Length: 209
Image (cartoon, rainbow, N blue to C red; front, top):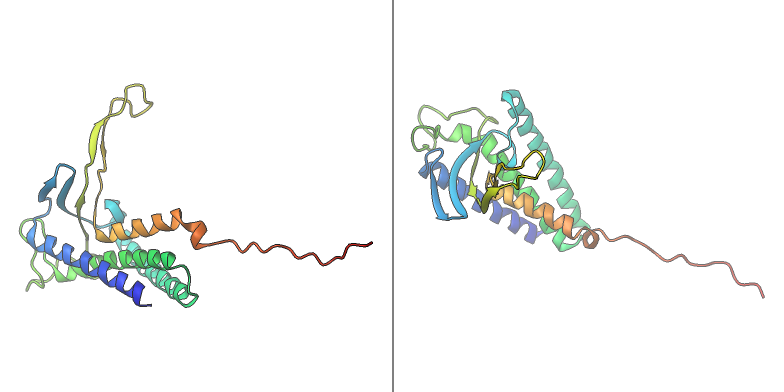
């Protein structure tokens, strides 16, 4: 159990340390260009991973509760895998998914209570006037932006022909990355992680002479 716990701890520490630093040192929308293809861009979303949104306050509560339930189920399954001594790669993958989900739940549940708004000034931790939102209404902090390349679709392409495109336009965080990496590993190595128990049939009938 030590290895998955270490993975979870490392992801959460890295995720939250980076989010708190960005939240308290960047204004909303501020960015710092590391390279032409890598930009630190501070944005927040009140929805799902990679900036996708879920409409309204009731949608926000539903999404937060859904995340909590999902984390409980993933945690239970991870514990089951450890007890069954499943493939270490499968355990590590679910540890990444669990940690990523936990990281975004922390933002959603507590950031609205713990931080002031980032719209017009640097966010303050535990402001006297209170946070910018209530429990489960916080925004998820995103900052990793990789606009690898951009161009135009060929004119002959239906619907999108001639339109400009950018790859990769989404802004995300360490938690999103952990979830994505965990899912990809499972998909790539599912045959190894979930081997079929194909046992050869044993013939019981004897040949008659």
